[in-house]
Length: 172
Image 1 (cartoon, rainbow, N blue to C red):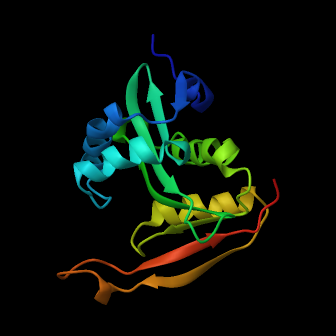
Image 2 (cartoon, rainbow, N blue to C red; image 1 turned 90 degrees about the vertical axis):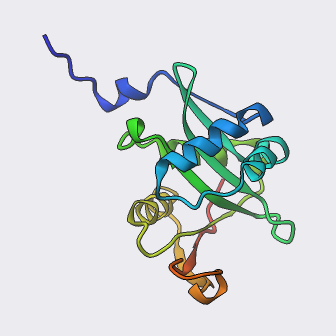
């Protein structure tokens, strides 16, 4: 007998928490395994987990890392959170995990003054575009796409431009 789990059943065992430096290596592996996100140095993920834990989110299922959202509040913009990467393990895609991690982030005390969310998204990353457009719709607020990092700014060849999605202002 085969039992189909509903989307809500699949995600009820999820746990969200702040990362710890001990998570850094597993976060690096998760990002590497996506094969779509820019892989930064393992040191950068250790730093995110240690020094930016208040604005980063770990998603676990049965004690296993299945998602990571990295973000920070730019020093010049105390009403803005910048989402750097949203990674979901291949086994957990299609369950709304990116959306849930964004919600978790915005509900944290560290984001209580946040009225804008920003993220750079390459033109070919349709899933992330949909994630951030969907967030603007759920928050019932505008978004705009502005030039941020042109292709010419990246070393070497082959890196797409990274326009910035700016969502807000939204009410708390």
